[in-house]
Image 1 (cartoon, helix red, strand yellow):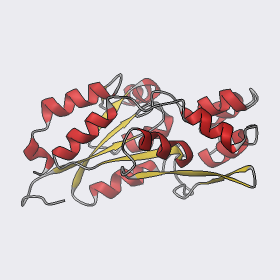
Image 2 (cartoon, rainbow, N blue to C red; image 1 turned 90 degrees about the vertical axis):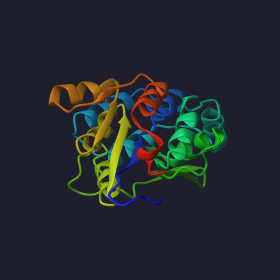
Image 3 (cartoon, rainbow, N blue to C red; image 1 turned 60 degrees about the vertical axis):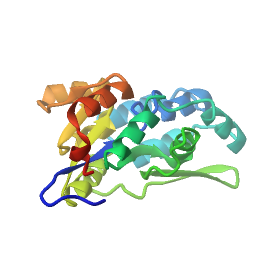
Length: 226
């Protein structure tokens, strides 16, 4: 990305579940294919008692689904229809959006591809079926992180280290660490409640149209580095 001398450029980082996707796709999967114990495991994670890796491994052990059933379920869901126009507008302003998800590539990437956004950079956890069984990997999680997606803060700091200002959009507990170090925050649902309680400034949004409205009102083409 070319920038003029001394010009500040933005990077926009988006959570996936409950943000780009109106639904938390992990919850969608567990509601369809797991026994009800998954909710108690979720409650422990929300309190910070276990990291995402342990939470997910315990929950996916409860899942009974074939690869075909899994794909058919994911194919029934779509990202927020206002997200592709927002991405196009950001790119037209010279801003590269990306996705940072504490969920799984097995649904993030197909849902983005279905929206025409297969080229959007994604960092996430990994899920695959191997010999008919679900296998998980957590390449970004590190000891010492907030167990609820604390690694996302490193993604924010990485773009800041490039001299960019980081805008972050999220909805849940896995976004709190990233929210605390972003230069601009869009928050909804439990993330908004947590930020309000902690005095972290944010712009409320209901869906991608709200973020797009902010971009149109506040970022000129020059602000994006054109």
